[in-house]
Amino acid sequence: MIRENNQPTYEKLLDLSPDVLCSVNEEGIFVTVSAAARELWGYEPRELVGTSYFRLLPEPQHPKALSLEQRLRNGSPQLKISLDFLHKSGSLVPATWSAQWEAQTGLMYCVARAAGDATEKMALQKMLVEEKVTAQKEISKAIISTQEKERGEIGKELHDNINQLLTTAKLCMENTFLFPDQRDLFARKSVDLVQTAIREIQALSRRWVGPSLQELSLKAALTELVGQYRALNRFRVEEFYSFCESALDKELKINLYRMVQEQLNNTLKYARASRVQLSLVGDARRLRLVIEDDGVGFDPPASPKGLGLANIRNRAALFRGKAVISSSAGKGCRLEVVFPQPGVASLSLPA
Image (cartoon, rainbow, N blue to C red; front, side, top):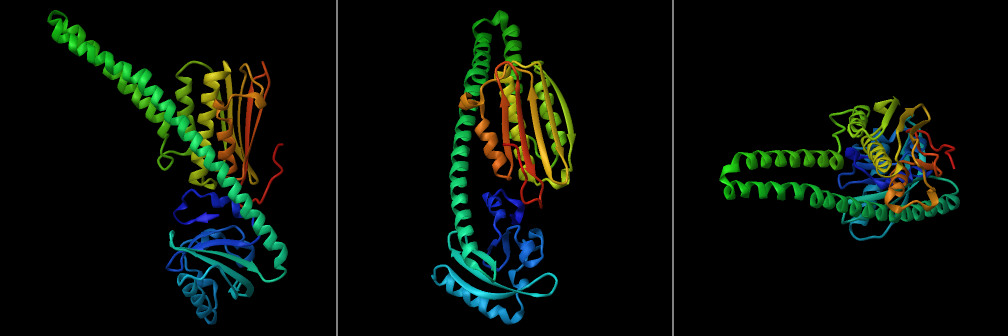
C-alpha cells in the first residue's frame, strides 16, 4: 500500500486484497491506496496518492459521492453505494464504494470493489481483516518487547560503562584538590576518562540511532556498520551487494539495516565465529539477504529469546518477507531473508 509522505504503515499487509483499500482525508485527497488500484482503475497507487479521488469519477457521479461523505460525517455508520469509476484508459468501471468515517483520524476509510459476485470477495475481505488484526497484535507485541530490550541494554551500557568512567573522572578531579602535588597527573587522568566516555557515548549513539539513509545509500550504511564490527577484530566479514537502491523504499532500507545489525550483534555475542559472509542481492522478482557464520551454532527451536530472531522475523513480515534460520551445534548459523520485489504479488519462499 502506498501512503502519503511514505510513512511506515502496517497496511502494507493488505496489498494482497483483490479490492482497492484506501483512505481519503477531509479534502477528498487519497492518503493511502492499495495495490489493487492497478487492476480496478489502471493506475499505480503512487499516481493516486496526494490527488483527489473525484478524478476517478465522472462529473454526474460527484453529487452521489458527496452525499455519502456528508451522511458519514453526520454520524451514519458504514455506507455502501454503487459508482461508475473512470479507468485510466477512459472506460467506465461499475463498482461498489463502501466507506466509513473515522473522526479521530479525520479520514474516510473506503473499499472499492468491482461489481459482480460479492459473496466470495466479502469472505476474503473478512479473512484479510482478521489476519491484519492478528498480525498487528503480533507486531505490537514484538515492538514492545524490542523497545524494552533496547531500553535495558542502553541502561546497562550507561550504568556499567559510561557511569563508571564518569565516576572515576570525578574522583580524579577531587584528588586534584586533595593532593596538590599530583594535580597534573589527576587532571590528565580526568581528561582521558572523559574523552573515553565521549567515545563510548558516540559509539552507543551510532549503534542505536543508526545512519540517516537520506544522506547515505543502504550499501554505504551497511559498509559503515560492518566496519564497526571489523574494528573489534572478533571475526572477518566478507560483503557482497548487488541490488537496485532506487527500487527499495525508505522503511525497507531501515529494516534491512536493523536486521543486519541485529544478526551481527547476535554473532558477536553468541557465535564465537571467525568468519561471517554477508550478501544482499536483488533481481526483478526478489531481494535476498543472507548472513552466514562459521561459529558454534545452536538449535533454533530451543534458542534463547534474547537472540532477537523473532524481531528479525517480524521486521521481515512487515514487507511480505520471510526469514529462515538454519543452524546446528558446531555447524555455524545461516540467516536468509527473502522479500518479493514491488509489483510481485507473492513468491514461493523457503519453508
